[in-house]
Image 1 (cartoon, rainbow, N blue to C red):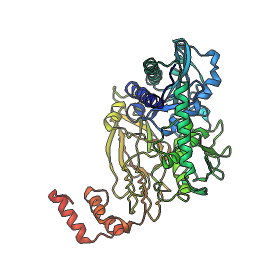
Image 2 (image 1 turned 90 degrees about the vertical axis):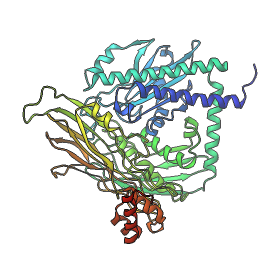
Image 3 (image 1 turned 90 degrees about the horizontal axis):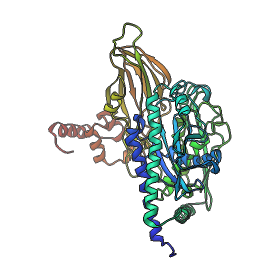
Image 4 (image 1 turned 180 degrees about the vertical axis):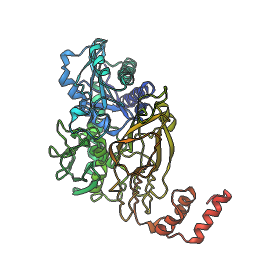
Length: 568
């Protein structure tokens, strides 16, 4: 048999990436939850028989896919190869063997070809409700946070475990939605399997061994070459964020060695009593992501390209929370991990990484119900609506930060129309927040304003999941901080940035999401860019004068041009 050429292997590698992207898009099209359909809070990947990730979908989040890179090995160990059959589908939401909290369901499907196990397909999606207290930080242990599904079979030889589905239905607020998402996850794995077997027939393959070794060896070598080109240095970084009741400090030391980079979180704050703790699998996912995008962003993500990034943290720190710590909002701490890592890496290789951004997503969930202070209309109903929103990303060395864009998660903001379709909720305002991007030679990305209420006849609880209310994004190399988070009722009553809070009938919640920080001295910003920002409404006239030194006559010229509809 002729030896397969490197060109052919490269074609197969590209095909595998397209296979898992189709897998992810099938999940987007069939999922019930808006967090998957509209925000893209998911991941998909293909693995070899040893559980090593060969390719990931472009659609999805680093926290999911990088955590899922470790998850398949847990499935193999728990299920046992001798118990794996064609038609099987496996499931879990174990925070420590999945992707970090109970609200993520991971499903793994073994892929057989001509009766032989050739690999696995895996996917993860965030589901809106898993029972318990609901999606929020209020729990004191993982047992309060919802239904736990250990690694087990959802289906064996094509037969779904109906007892499991009844248990799930009996423990969640949105049973049809959740079971629909589970079937969507299983289906997208099946689509990946079909496309893989089509590829194998086309190329005359009997297994994935050859292409797997080609992918992993080339990825490993390319990543190590990038690491080897860096200075042999180590540096420390530190950042403080709001936490729940007390501030949280993330400390990190990044050490560049010849063939790997070691990231150590010793000195980081201990586990919190509330559900913002982060399992190690999720911390590792975002620490690896931060360094990989800084060093080798174009090398495809797989087991070998991730392996040279080693991450350690003492047990029972907030970035290595142990069972049974509450972890529902593990993304809040996890999404700040890249900025902490960048703070150290910038001291090793300057002018590469961005300034700090909003970091964690600006999520909130509303639990709507008929009003209780007066008779409710007959059509009033209960509903759970989860909303994904973003603050601004940090400015980069040569580019402004992105407005209302989630970094590092990459999760999309949900459209108003999709949100209002999901339940009796009204979005009264959703627009960019002027002056929230930190001033700098490169400006930070803008946050958003949002105003939300229930439809007439309803009251609701809001689960706030915000940060940056006390500790805004910090600028880099002379750049200024981004705007802080604020939240209050429209009657002026202050609200907390985290936790479950009641909102009576007729009241709105008014929110301002944080901006990204600036990069470099604002006085060095190109005046034409300042005038452009003023014309677009990104900054106010006062901001342009105070931080960028624009004269009153220049401001008047810009305002006149805008009124006349002329370019600035």
